[in-house]
Length: 368
Image (tube, rainbow, N blue to C red; front, top):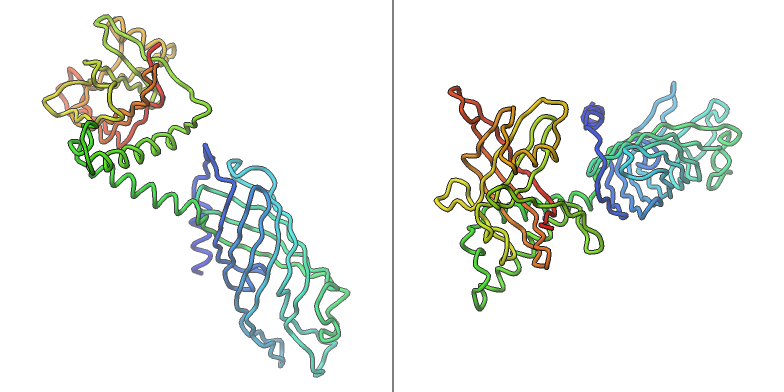
């Protein structure tokens, strides 16, 4: 019952592709079937599309009329090949299983002494539903009956094909480790005091701490934006009628977020800079425009905002939040923007109309 509940929960997970998936996997699974030694666990290591596993488990006693088939502790190894890519969401599998196959009894054996626990070779076919951390595998192990160890101790076993369904729920240990590390980094970022790292001209140990902290932040933004040193997709910052720099991003089907830099020093000269919107220093303005007009998109709205034309739609002004500017320090003044815990109220509305966003990224923008 517990296993079925876990399986149902995993099936309910929305499978989503990964922007940048690792080639290596170390998947710890729990389940039922030959790769798990009956009821047990296995550990599988994968690289690209090939995987190998080792499993251990327990088969409880079985009763056939007046015959008792003894329980056993079992082990198995195997290799697999995975079709498709992890980001496809599901992957067909074929493989070879070596190890525990069966605990059996047949009428033709009668009271003859025999070995009920069978080890040998079998084939695997099935599929895996994969998510970034959790996966569900359902497969069928085909035991041809003749590829067994010590066949003389297993009378009446050969000459028959045995089909065993297998099901297992797995956790990708690499992805779980990255999730934990990312959460630790996020906690450091969220709990940090901006005054501790807003000035990069410090000396001594403080500079070393700042550099280490900056490296964590830059690595995080590079990961979240799927950025690499060899290729970057750089979007353009535009200037409005007041010569203020403006960045925009579509954040929902009918919602568009804009960041306006009221002072140019807010984006250059430092590796990173943190600004609180509700502080007395107003370097940055953040607002959201919600419009249902079918001809509107981020490009057309950016032009309207830059030229201060009248915009049909609801405008939400930010009253609280934190903005972190990641400055890449090159000639093009490339930046990425991370906004956290934004609270917005609708402009010119008497009723209490609010929006909340826990995190928004605007990746890799620069002025031409």
